[in-house]
Image 1: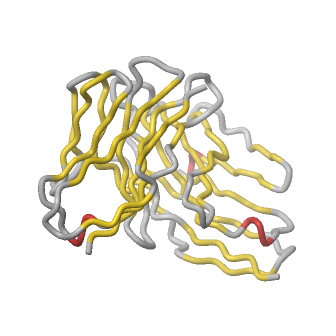
Image 2: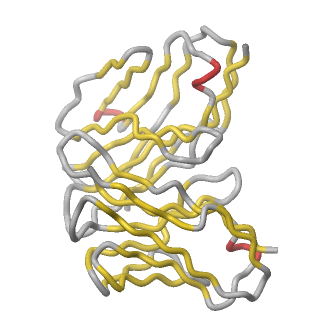
Length: 113
Length: 116
């Protein structure tokens, strides 16, 4: 079964600083990958998804970007963070097999100060 | 466009009460999947169930049960004899049929608090 690794677990960054969050997947090849953000007390918003290396689709206009340099690597970036970028960021990929849903990483809690 | 609505923002019940979390969805796809996830205070998302749009059979797993009704586009979740450990945010979600994207769209979540 798949395992998703996300790091760091928590991050405090000043406004205007750059950001790079990394997600790597084990146990599968060429998976669809997704970045979600959960603002404090809110639901999960899909930010980006990727169906393969170099293929990125953006769901909402924002200050963030994503890249997929390798099959099992998905990176979320920003050149200059805004206060509104604070939140809980989760990476996900579909499980293989008919019964199960999607596997999520343990998330990165980002606080922009 | 796909949409998932969880109208109940917060629910608080006393332990051992039954509680139902509502979920209403919208989709134009004829084949789709519905999910429920649990998010405890630690933040990770715990998969609870996946339902195929062709399978309207209700499901029971211990104290958990799910009622899927295509006629009303609802996929409600009931916890019987609730326990304090059930306290969490619960998300209902919808995914289009397996395709190149297969995006999951989440509802806004219902925060469930079980009081001892």
